[in-house]
Image (tube, rainbow, N blue to C red; front, side, top):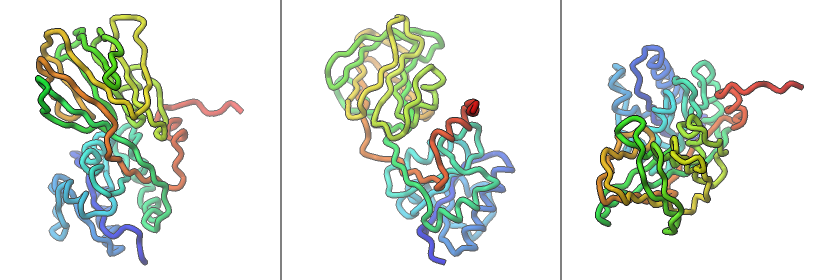
Length: 292
């Protein structure tokens, strides 16, 4: 049978034996269908499959048509942050807790994938944030985030002060324990836990959410995703960090500023034909069923 995907990458780091069974089952299931399979290097270190082709995430992005990520949203974010720079579609098998980004459940994944390989699926593009860090007006680093950017102090419950500019226009000074800047995808992550709104994925918006603001008038703001956000730090600051999708935190030094804008890269997710975003919310968040 001719399948729409010819080369598939298997990705997913796990220390749990039950999760590795899913990896092995999927690998042999795809090989039986004569599909070229590439296993991510860290993933492959758990298996003793001598015939497996091994590659890093960049090589999978360059060579594969589809990446299947096994695990929770953490595994998905780790891999997708790199894969979003390439023309590759992504789907996840959930072995985590909530798993907002991983649609497939282990006990039904192969049945769903059978239809997906024939081209029966829904496609969706999720935009990323691009974060550029400057110090003394000199460019230092670029980071990407699928869910959110979190500005915080190294110390717990420590107020920080910073200025927010939107499109180079001064917006307000913030006194808080931090700031979350989230995409619609990230609206169901840390932003939701901090009291932010749920924004459906097709909305072109960015959420700005103060963390424990020291001013009762501070409220979440939703802006168009075409806007450019700049964070400045007028006061002498120490122990400031930003964290993007739970990657390694980056220390913000004195005389720094941060530009945050919508990236030109997209996360190319695919879903089973039965996928419904609101059904996912109801399942993952435990929303009550209709009373009618």
